[in-house]
Image 1: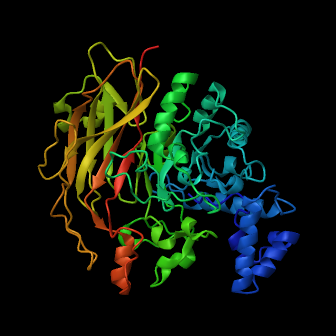
Image 2: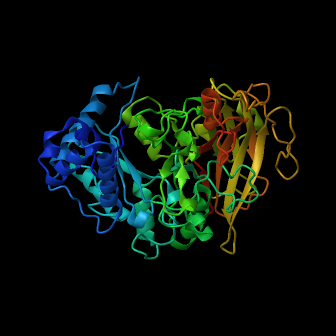
Image 3: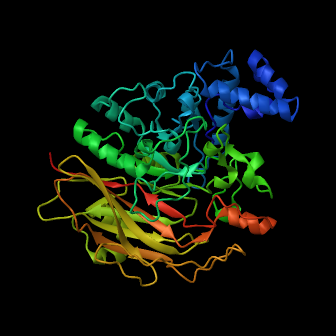
Length: 531
């Protein structure tokens, strides 16, 4: 899916091709003249484009929508050209780039429909409104007008400086039940990993999680013009957003952050390269080269707020459990949250939750059929626990066939106690190499590492190719709302910067680790008490 920014959509190719629709617009012609005048002019044009889309009053400098309409129709037609139901699915979408005062509020919009419906509209831009509620109104209008379907996926909450999953609306008003219902209608998913940082959780939010500090970007907003403070973090990461959602759901009767998890590249090169050994960077000028590590992804006047190219993450991918490889089935699976995120690897993971699963169910040939018949998949809901029962989960994980073995499978649980306080706990439910899980539910012995940093190599002589288990919550309280999601961790492998260093014979950057443990995060299964 091509998800170009709605603001100035398709401007880059139109500048390069001298598109008549662009040259007919005074501002478009000015940008074309700057773009055509050399590197200095191109940088000036880029600066003006960024300023127009990130600085109040957010007025569109284009005099008409002709250029935008032309490129949007081109995108729609490209999706039709390459869509092959059952073999290769090409969907239509765009990115709404609301960035008030540099605080990221970006959303990716995805359509279920083909050209006969998507061509009837134009992408909604920040110039139309910087308020997410207005975007949701636009989506409702699209569905009413065309009979089609669409929804929105928030991403890079970690660069929102506390706005993405807060307890106030964009207008600064307390969240209401109506707002919560509207948000969950139009935003069933959250993009939890991409090249601009992973946002499952943060070390300050999950101090007992030794895997929490993964590809962390936590110094500023997306513009690099405002430092981040610790109190913002709880409103920026998936795990803490789930916990905030439990609290708000208890107060309002509707949980506004009951979302599934996805991931994407967010690169601007048209190259969906997420493997550490084949990472091409965000922009054309950060594609592989001996000196790309010192480039800036987020420039800032304050050096402490800058993000360098070396800090980009080789991420991520969305995995969808769908009956068929078609627009409709993929969209429907995403809508019901039967999806999971990976940080770029192709781990396969499946989870079912229910009240009556047995250990024998994990090895049966009809594993999935039993899962659906007797429980719910990732993204589902368990309601009103039967007397004396605790949730039971069936989990299977298979390594990327071209990648690293698995270290462990975990269930992350969050819950709301009777006093209205939220908690979280990690359980290691399946671990490789015969390691033991202690009485506290954790395997404290690390899997180890086979990485040779100087050669940028590793071997699959540790870890397991497959991990599967049946797990029952030993601490279940039927009176407490809770969520459960699965995290699967690979064994350590070289980070992309380490591969670069060996390939080019250069020094490894010292601001990032030499190795990573890629991972997958499933959409949660929620438990809600009776009443």
